[in-house]
Amino acid sequence: MREISIAERYAIALLDIAVEKKAVEKFGEELARVVKLFEDSRELRTAVTHPRVDLETRKRVLGELMARTMVNPTCQNFIYLLVDRKRISALKLIMERYAELVDKHLGRVRAEVTSARPLSAPERARLTAALSKTTGKQVVLAERVDPALIGGVITRMGGKVIDGSVRARLAALRARLTAAH
Image (cartoon, rainbow, N blue to C red):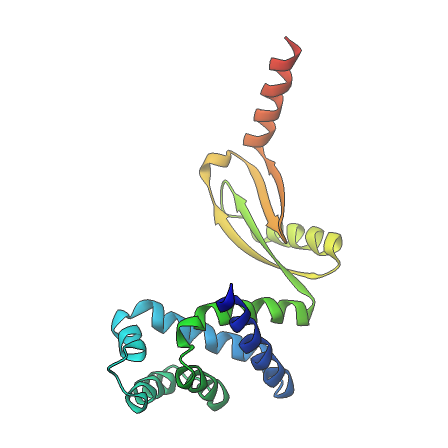
């Protein structure tokens, strides 16, 4: 719980700076790139978090990597601050919270859509438009494919689940038929 509140404070502070610099989306993308570096390299995680590695070495290693991945100086300084304050282990949580705050700031909502097959461009556009109309916000879709659905879609958005899958409809029909006998 404490780590979540720490991540929240850092994410809010970074968002304030990003709004001021008009780089809200850019900062999010750069944080995501740095998080990916950490996820892809156990050696990097060790070099930056191991107690025997001194602070200057940690910053040098991170600086070289961030320069190669084109992270702007403001985000670099933010990462260095996390290293200085021994909060770098919370980076992924900070990035996730930052993304949520950005969505709220920009008036958008994320929806995860699971379908039996990949959605076509017109299907995706119709679904996005319908969800946007329902929520009154811009909707960003994340798609997953699950052939077990047979057909239809399951949409998860803001804690709500809308199950429009053929599998769910068949299960409901089966339950009604069983109850009728």
